[in-house]
Image (tube, rainbow, N blue to C red):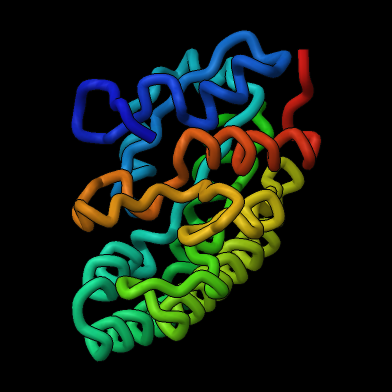
Length: 228
């Protein structure tokens, strides 16, 4: 959610869900180590560089990862151009899900080890589109296909949390909070999309409203955080 902090990771200046959550919860401090476009391996490399004192003090860690492993960047790039390429990319992403499952299990176990006192809350992905609101850029068939692939990825995330078998690792499902607020929503979209700039890096990511009423709200609903 723009505007961004300096650096390559496109971290929001003030509109990320960690910042929003911390500002309205009992937590005294929130640190954001997220980086747009990273897969599980890159994320674990980033985790390894976090100061050990931070890791020992942390009481809550939240993460959303796996989309890049599955091939979301490729899907969203080609699905704005050629229908056949879009179909091929979606099929390739679905075929890659068993590998993603293994990557996620390794990731969740490693994060739990790196943060030995923290509750690890895994958040999944919202449905990007409202299929009842087609547009020239996004026909209904395309929106249903992308949402279906997101649902399949969310299923893998849920399975990976269960397979991890660590009571400190849990899943928070954000899809209810985002329901009715995808791209094309008539009641306000929680997902960014700039039709005049299909290459805008904010496209297909939650906007400030999505981070507030979507991700941060889901954490409160699940009891992962409590208000001040």
